[in-house]
Structures are given as structure tokens and as C-alpha cells.
Length: 528
Length: 105
Image (cartoon, rainbow over all chains, first blue to last red; front, side, top):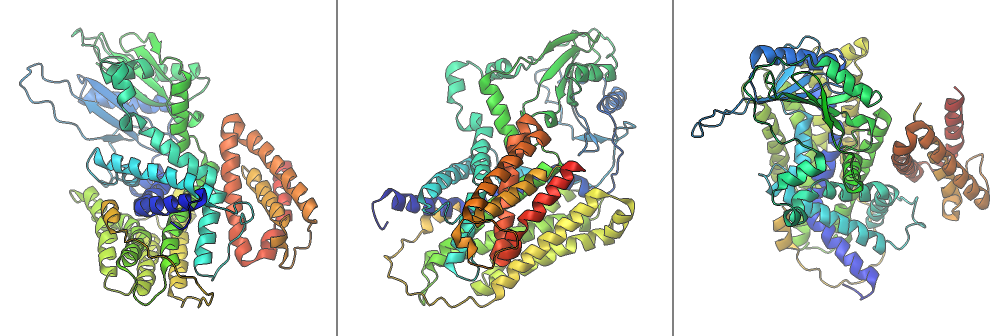
């Protein structure tokens, strides 16, 4: 620390918070940004499926008809209805537990995906799809609950870095539009400032709402202090009905489509997105219909419960109080489910701006300290981790998409192999890059990432019948958009590789001697 | 088209940049106000973009749309300005014109 002023202390805090959490934050930002297209990525990763859009009531009815045929005596049917962005009905069903308490619980059934029009099971390649990026974004592929805790810790660091960064930045308005190339450290500072300041509302919002999304996990104490059971809090807050014991009297389930239409009418045309059917074909059967989040900013949607035996309207979710509505809107702002195409792309570009902010911050740390003949250990560690995060993670993400096309479609366990492909490529490339001098490692890793993304449209065209020429002919917007996005990302990474390959401009400005910087090794071992 | 708010925001940002003497060192675009005029124009265009963000996206999404699109417009402007300052700043007029045409059309 050079001085004792507020600004200097904030600069010190900003540097350390950003550095220690930076690599994980970079990965969280990048995969989170990709997650704005979660359903689209999933659809791209199952190119066999091209279902036609179907109304929610018809999809619900066809799904129930299918479940009546295969498992009419279940405890719970959960239907996730298709919408503009997902074209399959997803079903999770739970078998009734054996009444004998010593019997093992019934095995968890895998997700079932149905054609919404016919109610017949869809057969497509097994994949985690966009869900993988989404889960990684806040679970970091670390066993529960540690991944979420680590993500939360990094988000706290991010929030601290944003606040301290704003206080540190002396010339927010003077430098508002200032970006100068080829000036070494000055350029990285400009890029960091511009990407941070111009999208500051987004960065602050996304970080804070991300924390709030998991706040009940990070801060469970208010609930434990006030409720004997967490379930009691949930029932009071969200109106979740406690599970009713079945009566054992068989009453066939009423047709479901009229209930979905009735719920939609009660919401003045709001769509239904989920249907939960407890104790189907029993006198106590209930049908809970949940509203689609796209109609409102609030991601915690309203629901209406009907009797499954006679179709009477039993109850609706309680009107949300201010606290719950605030939490719902914060979640909604974070995940952006309400966003139509224009706003979704805006969110995506804002996410990329955030990724740039984190990445340029990390690069700025090394740019500031890049001088002298023998770089100290901490510098080399940071530089290598920067290469591993910024240049190698994109290559891993491209490998995930390529693996989807290259692993045979009917191979067992292929979904996990796709995920493994991402991590092997990411960490494998990062390990290999250690063999090269840092500057060449930057160029080569970015080139590999660019080539990998450029290969995605080619491999897609060779392995499916939905390549760019075909999708242009058939007007397949999703596949055209995906191919163009891959080409754009490849271009961007290629540009980065080209810039990294150029000999840096010699900076002749005289520098003053600095106090030695402490080696950041122990903290970084925690973060890595 | 849902992008009028973003186009107006781009034009507003370009004018606000032109209100700063630091960005007037390079050759100026053909249609440029003096610093005070550019600031007034920037603020007016920003107000217009707020208006159309709310009319296009509704009361709740309007704020999200305006903040998001203005941020992205700013990033686009800065990226262009860093390489082609005259073009980037001069685009404020076509951006305004396209946005206005979209409103009429």
C-alpha cells in the first residue's frame, strides 16, 4: 500500500479481491453468459429433434395420456411444458414408496422427454446440453454444497471488487469513452475501465442478484430462528401444499387440458409452464398449474391448484408480500427468463462485457508488473493461471460442443463424456501451455480455441443434415444463428491470438521504482 | 423493431462524447454541434431512448431494456471510437435516422 488515503486502500482491496477470485469469476461469467441461451444450446445439441410448437394445454394432455398408459399409480407427476424455446415436454415422475418401511425407496426415474403433439417419447442423443453451462456457472462441477459455497464466496469478492473499484476510479466521467490501443498497461486499464463503467449497472445487478438467488442457503439462520422446520417456512412463503396421503379410493383423473385453459384464462392469457399432479387417479388427486415466467419480471410464478378428482379449483398461491416479490424479481433479473430475443441478446452482450471486465482486470495485474529481467514466482503463477482461464476455457467449451457431434449418438454414457471432454481440453491445454514460453502460450492457446470454435459449424455440417447450407434453405433460425455465433466467436479469439502474437510496443516511459510486491501464492492455491 | 431505444442511446452517447473536448481532437464528423449543443443533444436523445424503451418493452422491462441497451450502445461506441473515431461519432445521425424511420414504418 502506497498511501493511507481511502482511494489507495480501496485500490489495494480491489486488486486482491479481483485477483484471488478472478479466474473462477471469469469462468462463472463466461458460462453464465452462455446460459442465457440454455434451451437453444440444448436444442442444438439434440439435432435429431425438430418438433413443431404445440399449445400448453394440448402438450399437458398428451403427456398425461402417456403417463396414464405407463405408470397410472405414481405419487407425483411433474410436467414441464414446451414453450417458444423448448420443444419437448419434460416429465419427472415419482413412484409411490413401498408401504413396508424396510423396503428400499423406489429408484429415481430418469427424465422422460415427450413429443408434445403425440405424447410419444422422443429419442435423441443423450446430452446435458445447455444445462451443463448453467449448472457449472454456480456449482463449478464441485460436489454439493461446496461448489455453491465457492461460487457465493467469489460473488462476495466480486461485489467487494465492484464497490472498491468504483471508489478507486478517479476519472469515471473523464475517461468514460476512452480506449487507447497499443499503449501497454494503459490500454489494459482503459479496457478494464470501459468494460466495467459502461455496463456497471449490469455488473452490480448480476453480482448482487446472483448472491440473493442462493441467499437462503448462504444465510439460513433467519429461517432456523423463526421456524421449527424449514418446510414450514416454504409452505408459508410459497404456498406449497403438504403432501396428502392418498385415500386409496380410485377416481380417474379429470382431463387436464380444460384445467390448463382455465388457469390461463384466470391469468388473463398468461401461459402455463409446469403442472404437478399429486396422487393421480386417487380421490385426493391435486393438479397444480404454475404460470410461465416469461410474462413477468418475477421469476417466482403464481400457481393454481385444482382437484384432480372433479376439477374443482381448490386454491391459488398466496399473493406475494413485498419481500417475496422482491426476491422473485431479483431472481428474474438475474436469469432473464422474461427476455425476448432483443433483450436476451442484450443480456448476452452484457455478460460478455462482464467477462471482458474480469479478463482485462486479470491481464492488467500482470501488465502492471511486467518488467525486470526475472519475473518473481507470483507473477509467473498469475500469468499461467490467466492463460489457463482466459485462453483455455473457451477451447474447453468448444470441445464440449464438438464432442456432442463426434461421440456416436447412441453410445452409453455419452453425456458424461461430453462434460469430460470440456474439462480434459480445458485443463489439459492449460497444462500443455506450461511447456511454452508465456507469450507463445497465449498465441497458441487462443489459436487452438479459435480453430475449435471454427470447427463447430464444419463438424455440424458433416455429422448432421442441419449444416449451414441446409439450415439456410429451410430457414432454420436456431441453427443459422448458432453457426454464425460460432464463426463470430472464432473470429474474436483469432483476433486475440493475432494481437497476442505481435511484438508489444516498446514502452519508453520512465517508471519509478516500486516497493516489492508480496508473493500471492498461498491465497492463489485456495482459489485455484 | 425493438432496437430503437438502443439506436437512440448510441446517438446520445456519441453526442455526449462530442461534448467532451478530449474527443474533439480527431477530425470531426460532418454534422457536429459545439460542445454545449452536443451535450444538450445527447441528453435529449437519451430522454427519447428512455421513452421508447418504456413504450416498446412496457413499464417493467422498460428499465431493464433501457439500461442494458444504453450500456451496450456505449460499449459499441467506445470500440468503434478507439479505431475509427470520426466514423463512430458520425454514426449518431444515421442511428437517429434509422430509429426514427423504424418508428414511422
